Length: 253
Image (cartoon, rainbow, N blue to C red):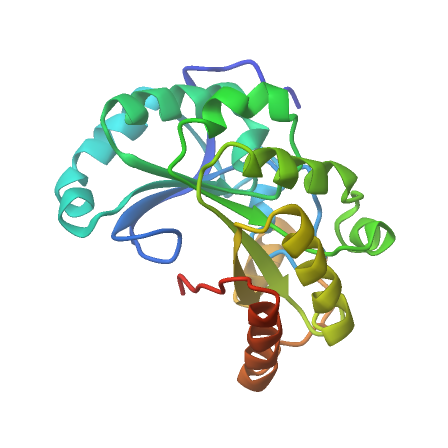
């Protein structure tokens, strides 16, 4: 599937107004289709591909028209637009067209990304962001490959490159018992952050199973059920350990 051919429009999962979990204020989150990873715990499998029964094609003009109707909410709350997915950078031309239009509208822009992209290809897009969320799924490249079908080398490189842009960045850890929710693994994450991206903030995203019904709709195999959600005490322990490394832990949930 060619994901680089259409700057006039592209495939989305949904355009969610009144979103409050993906940045400051009241936002519209644009969930874009397509993703290079296949995370074993993914709650949005409809985002794997561009075309499936749960995605639809939309033009940039239609998106902008819908966004304009929400402007009062952004301005009164300090909100804006968040590009998510799937993986927002999977359709770079479509993303670029939306970003350029909304940047010219003076909107606060944020992006959520798994980090698996060509930095040079999306550099101009990232420069126009006010906030960047990047996933940190696993520090061990072999484990990352096992759980997502991709190694983490490119992702770690891109996190470092994005940090040089001087744009506020939050690393998000999908925190999953059985995958990465151990003190040993978290310590390796925090040590890497302290030495490599010391100004990045951190957010823990506890695993959930809210999206399992989508697998049935798409006739896909359910993700393995041995994953567990970390309890509040474990998240608190991770938070305290992160703070010992001088890392600011935030929550948009």
